[in-house]
Image (tube, rainbow over all chains, first blue to last red; front, side, top):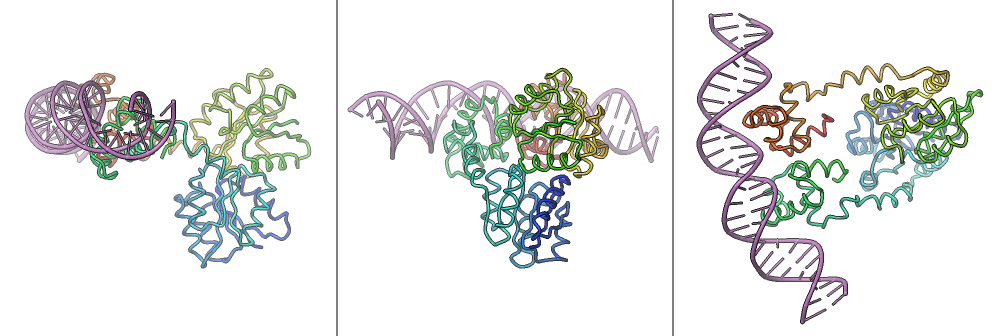
Length: 204
Length: 204
DNA sequence: AAACTACCTATCCGATCGGATAGGTGGATA
DNA sequence: TATCCACCTATCCGATCGGATAGGTAGTTT
């Protein structure tokens, strides 16, 4: 079973390789950047499984994942990340990733997950996918109505009231109304503050 | 030599413990949250060295580091982190941390660093501290004059032109001038976008 | 039925913003 | 000296924003 690990954290990379190689049946290669991973895939494909760090030079979000999957027809690729949100994990799995591995996973589970994925299954830790669901709706966001969230989303994209109104297919005065309520709820005194607070809180 | 590792990433924690215990002379304990670390320290102090993950439930930035150091008079504590900036590392070392370990460190170097710190030395990887220095002045920031940076700082605090003018002791029209140049340089079309871009770029 | 909530529209008005334009100073450079 | 650059001030004007006020609809709860 041939596995390729791409992660810029030397420490974690060394560990993964060691753990996996210890399994006997697994032969593991490792690189530290996305471009190195690409080279390696072009030279040595196909691997039974490729593990890509979500935060890694060259990855550029899910683009790297998709690029890697496109190589060597139907290459099985899984994401590994310490910081990624549930949203990212879901998008990755939807895009056809072989799995998603948070770094908060015990080493033993990781080895099992890798074997599981290498056998063609799709893996994601249920606890991560479910517990993250709760945090999904941010404490601040829970106080906002659906419309307000839509308006706030537009705001965090730097749009004007008029643009937001057009996008949501409502009138501009209505947007201003929501905006006013947002300022109150977010304790902001103008749109810039509101946008910053929303970003700070990790919304959108 | 007794070491305590506190990291919420099971994978990395398992690895660290294994690597360190393999050294023979090191006895390692591990926990997954800051509060657990506190309990362990209270029960088993003093350790020769404590490794705290900077991003970990309960840490609250450098507060956790300081709290841990305050326990058991002069407890030696080092930070370990995969995401922290050079700024954080510097602050930690200034606050008296035993060291700073980025997760991008090879496993072998880590073991050496741990031994080094346990012997009473202060450790930080030079390459991390220096290369980060270059990025210190952000590519974007380099294109801004001093005044523009001051104005931008005010903007990222959600201030109005009038407030910024008062703070910098200049006239409001002048602030507007700088604002206009900022939009051009940051490729923003309004103040909110400019503020978001500045934040995104990690300025201020 | 009454009260409440989320949502929508509208108008008025003062404040603020964003752009254009037209200056001026001081310091560094060619 | 002439030229550039960073910085400052000023005025005009249309667009946008932020707040207040006054409605309306639909669905839910009491």
